[in-house]
Image (tube, rainbow, N blue to C red):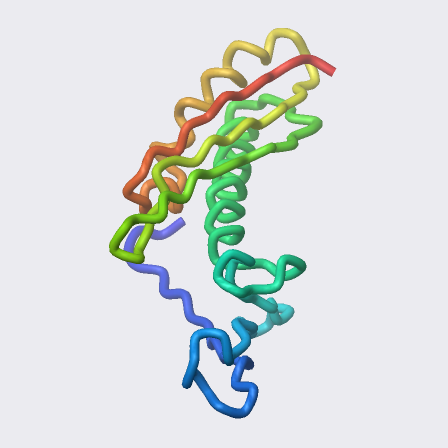
Length: 157
């Protein structure tokens, strides 16, 4: 990987004008489409508490997914480079969003709970250690201003 900047770009289009724009808070839909060149479109909305569709991804879901996915990919890279054979990885991540009296809000923390299986007993110690090292390298976790905690379980197949 080369040092330096790596740009990312997308197009986001709001699809929620139901005829009157945002003339009232209740009068518009929250649906939007995210387009990234060469990739499938992603449909988004607001969280249901903000009048979004519960069956569609919202920005809070995607932030949690980005943190979990970055942990996964960084962890797998560390393990592969150390010749630790990970045969299974599943995460049950959660996050806490605090709504504030001023109408805003922010995440206060995210908890990752990866369950990892490695191929051989001698890989366990290093495989457990790497979960603590991930945040030194995970671009997304290094970019947020709240703690990203990890309670990993690692076992042998």
